[in-house]
Length: 263
Image (cartoon, rainbow, N blue to C red):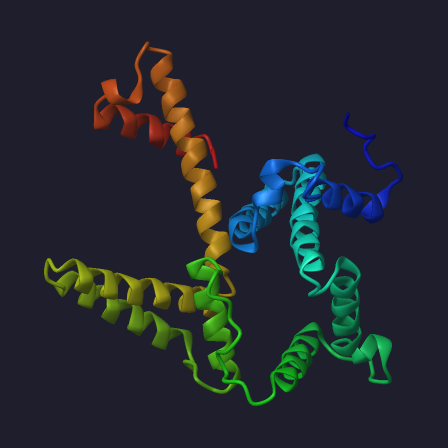
């Protein structure tokens, strides 16, 4: 017969629930079978759902999504505990020490009389010291979304002077890469290579403009979704679905949605 769920509140209760779920004798068969690799995609997905709730300013959902993300941390920590590697408290202690170490102007004797930009530079300097002799690009996670990873790689390279001095140089490079894509032959490998180069420069242009490419594309995705839903709604008023409409009909409804400021 199942035993009562753990009582209490806060992180301790969550950790006890997670341990119960993974118990080899009395836990959930699905949870018991999971590994770091099988859980990792859920961790990434939950992080994106947190970002989505923030973008939509849905704070009730943000609370729920943060809980889902916290569950992922608890899950990985429980598996590590079972293997004798580390536990949740060690993870929490590790990040606490890191935050203290990287904020000497708050927790140390350095002056707080500096700009946010200077504090960012100091943060990166401390991180670089922590990495020691590691390469400039080492540690940029392979599992990041490609646009986000491109931005992080570019920022790392820029810190050591490998960067364009002016925005116009980036725009010139963008034109060059677009031309190379236009001239690429029908070989898929060549097209993918040139397309990737163009995207990389677009990320770099965004960085020089102060625009995050990942955030900008998420915004455009939301806008496209909202406007296409408006197209579907417009077609529904005349008893049609998108596959039954002409491109001209859909374009007209799309323009209408733009004029209405749907985004």
